[in-house]
Structure formats: structure tokens, C-alpha cells
Length: 162
Image (cartoon, rainbow, N blue to C red; front, side, top):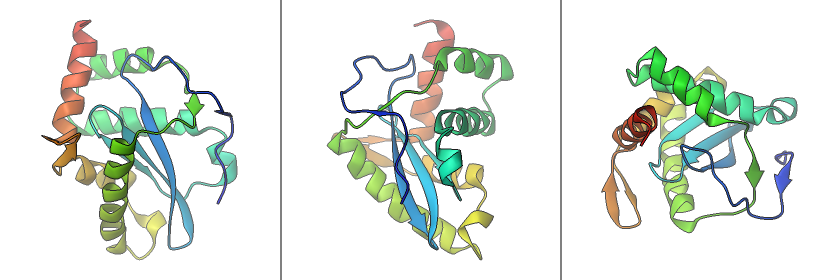
């Protein structure tokens, strides 16, 4: 399993304007994939078939799949452009949040079910799988949460300048 390059040993104090994300390397069919989870909303993104050279540009891949997923959520192009401008460069540390990790473990199990329907994991549509993950209810710190709805609210606050 490849390791994520450029990970700070010290926790980063400042998250982006949309908050922090966790990334986890997972394997399906002996293929390395990445599962992202937004800390606040539990909004998940799935990137199948990642190779070591692609992991070196993980921030770019995250940005691309995140913005594309917002479009599938029906968010208007001008708002997506504003989110793109607000994201800033990706930065990584090894800090973990047990609640987010628990959500990611459940998401990884659900991912296994979704990708098992395909002949091979690389055949899975990353946006469709991500959308399925975000349409299911989750629990975050003891409270029910719908990730897609929570992310749309988070993006709306950013667009409104709140």
C-alpha cells in the first residue's frame, strides 16, 4: 500500500473554508482506492484505481471529484466556481478524529457492497458511488445526518459569505 506523500507529522491548525477532510487508502480487488470524508458533513468521495504517481497529486484529484460531485448534487456553476476558489491548496497531516474514522469504516463497508456489483472496481463510476454514499443517513457524534444535504448547506453558507 502506498503512503500519502507530503503528510505533516504535526497537526495542521487551520482547515480550509469548507473545513477539514479525512482521506483513507482502501483496497478492493487488489486495487488501491481512496475514500475521502468531510469531517463536518460526512460527505464522502471515492476515487478507484489510484496509483502511486496519482497519489502525488491527491489534492488535485480531490478537487476535481469534489467539484464534479457538487455538480451532480445540482449546485449551480457560479457557486461551484466560488467553492473552487475557496478550496485553496490541499494540505495533509496525520491527525485523526475517531468519529470521522468510524463513519469512514461504515462507508468503506458500504463501498464494498457498491463496487461488488461491478466486474472490477475500476469499472465503478466514482461519482455515482460517491452519490450513493452521500444519500444514505449516517450518525455523527450521536446525531443523525444526511451527508448530501449537509454538504449543500455548507456550500450555501460559503456562497452566502456566512
